Length: 399
Image (tube, rainbow, N blue to C red):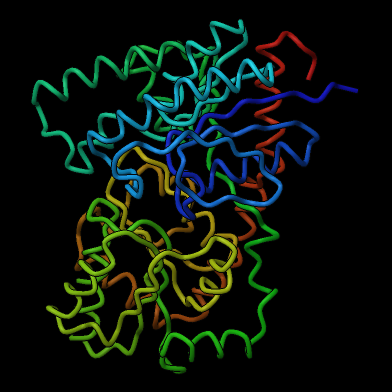
């Protein structure tokens, strides 16, 4: 029987934050623990503690102690605190593997891995430079973009292995950043099919939830779960709701997530569609499944061409048909079962939603097929076995 491994994970973020990459980290940890491995996560001082997970946090910054991390200069200070914490925890637990999430996690993990002479694994969730461009932190073709591209190339070539959240990511690493293809192990985001199971909620529970949020009982719901930001297409969801209202469609949008809630609520008021949209704000991950169960349709208007889109897997597990902007990441997850609109085409997005609203049988069939696709391809139990096989290969151990 193979021995259990000790893994030091690095999360350069305020874990746990109930969204996106945080969910990938959480589900990886839970799946590895179910296989009997020990995981210690080192992260920033803010975030939500979770039962059963060994979380080690940095000390707070001496200024702006309540600061929430985003793309800003303050992140350099957070990472400066994270590095010595990682080194101390590495010396304490003597890990077999150091597993760094995102580029900062890989960069911080590199000296620790060299010090302890253990392999470094980089969990790649998208291009660092392109993410900063998406967030408006960098301007295209500027000197800072060139500098960050050079830094990204340096970081990407330090780990012994890279886990990528999409096939597109593998192509970028090889073609743009010169990473050796044999270091790259595609590991798409996955989903907990037990947690996201539509059969666990009764009609009475869902009816009560509608009342709690003042959603009309007879209005079909279009559901979104994720960060609220323009690069995520949140403004397009509001515009699509306005288009559908003008066309006389009785439909309600349930938009779950944060930040920028007030920004988009104000935008909805300006477009006279506030009565057709419920903004929940930050959604606790444990409550996400029952809220998603209200959706007749789920939607992803994400426009980034490099980041993963793990929310789509939650939709699939909930047996919901998905309307999405057409890009390689969405195609990778949904295949021919997605209902696509050209990227950034709000009119086409609204039309795709409208057509699906009027075809309940197609919605039912697509939803059932998408849940089965999630079961066959995107189950965390299978993904954890791939992660461990990668670890053991680096350690020269038999899987």
